Picture 1: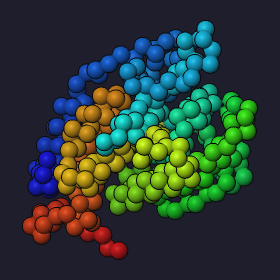
Picture 2 (picture 1 turned 180 degrees about the vertical axis):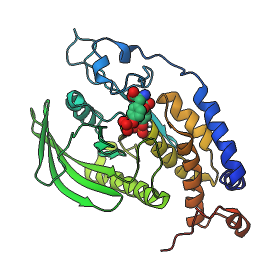
Picture 3 (picture 1 turned 135 degrees about the vertical axis):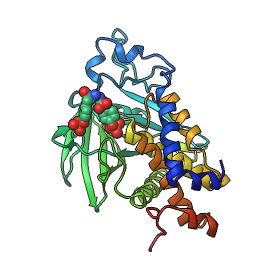
Picture 4 (picture 1 turned 45 degrees about the vertical axis):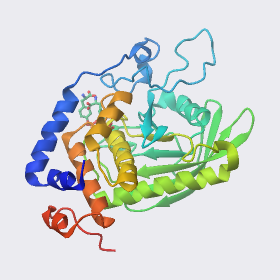
Length: 314
Ligand code: PTR
Ligand code: PTR
């Protein structure tokens, strides 16, 4: 899809069409099974009874007990990135009782970066367990893992922490970057597209810095292990984040945009991804803003943009 189409989409008439386009995508029934998610022993591991986890793309934990078919289950799916298989793991915000499973997944999948786009409590309700310590020196013990908070760096829209993840049994350690985006209400869109785009750039940078630390382990996998992305249900805000990351990579590579195709592909791996029409529209707005900031729009296209999309002032 051309830049022309993107600019058309973010105009008033276009936004109404986008909402309709999204509703059409959302109405399609899921295309896959949820057998593991529905196992009796696994039901308490799902945060929301109406948000299930596909079998075909789910992240399986190592089967520690051969007699227990439920021990490999976590509510998490692999999601491909732009020209990168399994670039992300999209998952729900851990529940108090799934914190050990969550850290085991991070360890087993060798993930280095965790992106969190919900707060622990929103509007008085628990959205995600406190699975890491918010202050420097805090420690969390979870199953066979220990998590120590080494650094915390807060800014208005996000908080970035450096965590040390230790596998207790072997005393192996890994540095994990925890990237919490605070400027994004549930069932909504971020307060600022610009801040989210900036955050997205930081996520990529952290991933690449940490990969460099690992030396040759990920040779041949230029972008490394999956980035773990979660919100509360792991579909609305998480899906929006992944859509933007994929679309920006495509835009940089080819100069073209395919938001609809990207959302359809993500939904085929992580059921129900992108929860609200507003989030679908937001993806278009944010991409237009990105294209504008990169000088990818012609003067005529810039003149057509709605006033909510502003040129970078800095
Ligand atoms: N279908 C929802 C459920 O029961 O899980 C209903 C719901 C509605 C849940 C709003 C949460 C909602 O938002 P909040 O947790 O922020 O009040
Ligand atoms: N039962 C919840 C509801 O529909 O309200 C499930 C749900 C909760 C769905 C949060 C999406 C949610 O948003 P996010 O995926 O961004 O945490």
